[in-house]
Length: 531
Image (cartoon, rainbow, N blue to C red; front, side):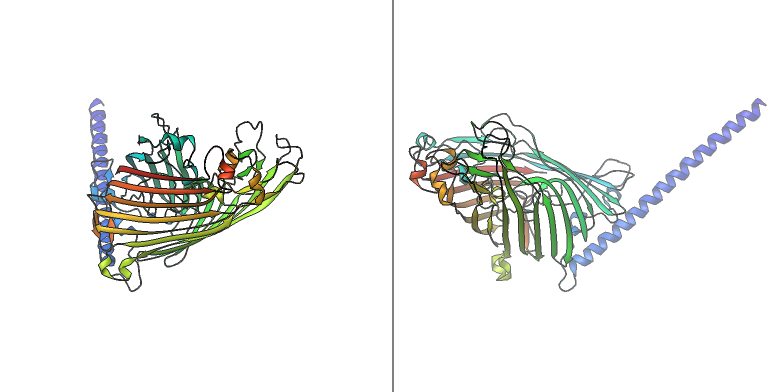
């Protein structure tokens, strides 16, 4: 009996070993099939890249699909691990000013450090950059590594009298994680991204802050995004090494629900509802929904009734791009229960805006221009101040509430317009410059002249603003890719920024604190290492 039991155990052990061999053979067959599919997809991509049909753009995934990928399982050949998942949509751009969402003033055209999760239909990508930049101001002291035109010191102010200073910062270094999973409804993409720019500008202690946290589900034809993301209004237009939001630029990030659809070859449409935030200025100061001026006790009269509604159309074709976007919003103040009452009133006004931008590849005129680009944007609207953070102190509207003799206060959306134009010149694939000029204008109601001269309210009323930018950027690992340039993983830049602002009412509005205008001249250098 014991001999029979020993033979039975031996047979069971042999069967177990046989199962392992069969499992290993099946695994090897799966590897070979995956490698064969990958080779065929690569051959197809190469054929399409060499001979696209008339009027057809090169597939956006052709380059990304051939990038090397890191693998978490050394037993799996790199080719099989890098094979594109069927139906997986290419990842959203990681921070390109040319991707239609504007996003950031720095471009990143690298794919990030990406890995396929073994045994799943998911891919994880890590990306970001380390940056350090220094600056020197030649006019008034402006202790910020991200100065805006709206806040440059006015001539004759204490900061102007003190003179310019020098600073060094690395707090805008960034890191992010992006996941993509192939599911029955298309691609589920999620992103979490942050940097260290949450602290005080001049502080050596960097504070981590959340920049983006969202999920997007769908296909290239239609998808929906939910979360904290770049506003649909955003655009960067031109390239700069300055981490500030420059004049006429919009880099708003806020909670939203967005739908995106491909309407025709090269034509994409977006619609979103986004977080509202009425920001208005009165004689008491600048109000937002969550903040009040110094000395104002209690809740803010600034109120939100409905979300902001935004729409955008984009067209892209072989380096040529145009976009048109619009914005509708409701601005409300409710004084009941706040220090602004009596009287207890509610006032509403509509805000709206339209904007357009374009990018023209100069090679369309002559191949001699190479990858040079001509860019421009323009906008007009009322009550859209908070979407242009560099232009005003978030002023969507003005109110005469609190002024002497006012018994029936009003809320007036501010008309505003502006334009920017720039030229991107490639001296060589590794060396390029940007030349930019921007102009902006705001119109204020006449009662704004009654704000207390020299107060925060009066000195925040920027009527006209101008900015000029010239830079030289060296990317030693850049390379020419057909008619465009891939800038690689390292940028070293030197930039000069000129800014000027005029306050509504001139010296009468700002005396005795300062004159009614301010000028700033800044030079800065920057080094950015991306991954």
